[in-house]
Image (cartoon, rainbow, N blue to C red; front, side):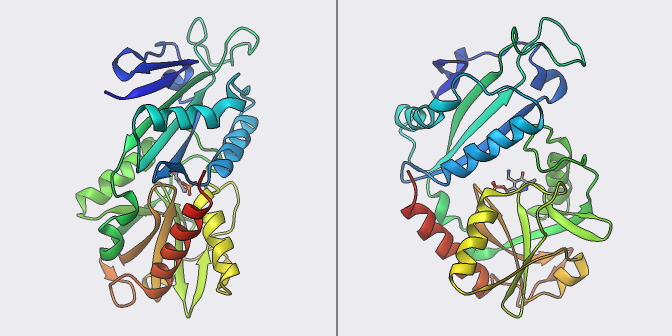
Length: 286
Ligand code: PMP
């Protein structure tokens, strides 16, 4: 049985509880982070904590008292669960007020809820999907306007994954005003003539921690990067396509709405970026 963390305590998962009045349960009033673990070490930990701070700030949510201890808590969960490869999920909510109320509770009397748990994925970095590539469909992006905040409001992304599944595909790319915003749980890229193209940062997309690292490594390797929007039609005609996220790293996309991208197999730029990302981030893991 897993050991999980809830509000200052390490407990067996079956004994960890959260109030029915918790605002994340009633109103999706919570933010989260997912940090990958490879070989027992945390990938891009600082980036995830910085984004957590930003999410909390954007929602006027107070920092939980354990904010400064999050590295120790992550490491203790890795140790207690013998985690080698997998993820650590972290959620902070505005806490459980005395009753259901749209108005935020007084932060003086309602402390944030903090939950962390591990998910074991042996061989996470050696996913067979990376050799095969993903098939995606495109769907309308009907999410709210602050996608830069990593909230637990994930119903539409979840529905998108179900639509992909119903179409025998792996994931969905979201389209707004004719342009791809991102994937349901990842950032989206195309490659055209060795140029890596991905949407620029704004409130329309999550500022992926993996995105930031991959673009940095690409530039360091003298690869050309263009941060701009692209359409689904442009993506279908691209040489390559791929996604990035903390748990999939760099993952090639080989089909969009039934149309093969490039040769219909993972492209060389995507494969190289995956190698560089895994090598560099495992070297920097803590
Ligand atoms: N966009 C969305 C909508 C996401 O949910 C995620 C992953 N949580 C990402 C992008 C990728 O972000 P990261 O690289 O930090 O995992």
